[in-house]
Each structure stands twice: as C-alpha cells, then as structure tokens.
Image (cartoon, rainbow, N blue to C red; front, side, top):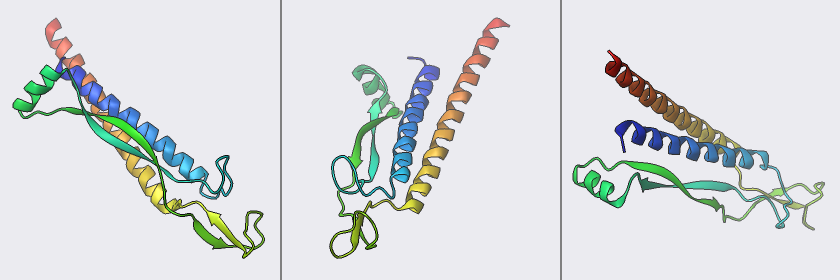
Length: 147
C-alpha cells in the first residue's frame, strides 16, 4: 500500500475513533444528572478504550517492524462502563431520594468530561490536518508527473 494511502488510512482511523469518543463524552455530559435509567439506578459513566492495530498484512507488518517504522492505526476496543459506586447527594425533596433523603447521582465530573472533550476535539483536528496534508502531497505528486 502506498505511503499516501497508508497515512490517510491511519488519519481516518483516528478521526473515526475520536468522533466516537466525542459522542460518548457528549452522552456522559447529557446524563450527568440522570438518576433513573432503564437498567435501574443512576447513569453510569462510559469511556472509550483505544488500541493500536497494525496497518497492513502480516508480511507488511513484519517488514515494517524490521525497518523500525511500526505504523499502527487506532481501533476502538471497548466502551467501558464505570464500576464505581454512585455519588450520594442529600436532597430529601428529590423524587428518587431514599428514606434518609439521599439521592444516588452519576459519577460524571462535568469539568473532567469537558477537558476530555477538548482533548478529543484537538486530536480530531490534528488527524484532519494530517489527512488534508497527505491529500495535498498526493496531489502535488500527481502534478509533478504532468509536467
């Protein structure tokens, strides 16, 4: 596979992975106050787990490893659900309060989710820039061939 296409494939895998991460983070933010879910109890925070996957065939990967290039693309392995206990908030007027007046709230920290969202957005932008630069280099290479 050509270097241009391989770099585009790597960037596009990063774009897709970061888009999924932003969707999960948006869901976390939207449900930061959700105390009742279909499964029962408060919403459980989710997080995306990434892994590096080889870009080509086993033979290509062997050659890449021996030449120390080791190109990898991003792959989403799992969407992990937080297993921590929910926060207990004292609010006896809440409809989901227990007999002691405590409400089980999701373990979503809005500021942490926003920082993660900014990080995901910047990673998405970096992958988009890399994809556009690879595309631009491919176009320039074709222009050289025309002259």
